[in-house]
Length: 316
Image (cartoon, rainbow, N blue to C red):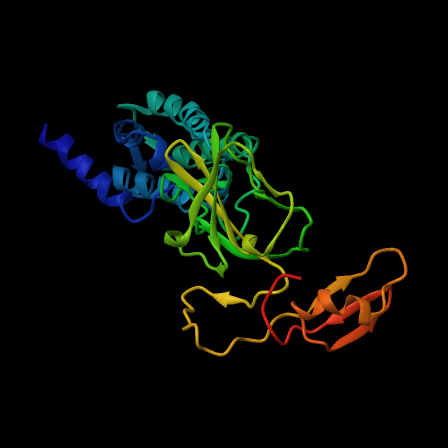
């Protein structure tokens, strides 16, 4: 009993510093049976420690073994089956039997080569797609840690700026370059006027499975940041942000609160497009333009006027 406990402690100490596919899937008791009869040729003595160092070299420190084990999600069970198929027959054959170290070297190296060849045929994954999102489908099995490596990207994607034309349709697609689960829920939120990623500034506007958010007729009160968050069960998968901008209202960053008496910022110039018919003289249309813009106007090609808003900040 004491001898068995001592052997288990020795095995644990030998494998503690270097993990690999072998330790992930082969039971310690099977390793003890495998190495029980390991004979050092030079001294003709049984040495279990030397056998474990051999396993460490052939499997644990073998980069080809580790790379062959980098399989897609769910295929770690097949890795165990492949390794057991190579190791257990040898363990059963060598249990309580004395064998020269050269025999061990040949049999274990063959087992490692067979595992590499078979494991390399298991499905791989394309890997992680930056820059954001919880990508479980992109994770690969790591034989050094005996678990799947996550992509470790933040949930929040960078803000995308979207230009809008007043009174026209605006659309935002909640799309990501990686696979999404089937049982997903999409929640759209809106933070009026500001460009932000601060979650407490958003108010929910719709929830369901639709990844398209459409505004039939865009106006100034639609300007702001739209957040699309995709859930699977209770887990958030990714959060996308769209900053919708238009003409006629100054850009205000999140947290920028100015008193009413503060001077107004310069407003982005906007283009007033004339109808297809010949444009009206400026004198006849001045009553329409004066309330929104200053009188300064610059003709543009294509029957358009570039009007600079230097007075009141009203919609065009």
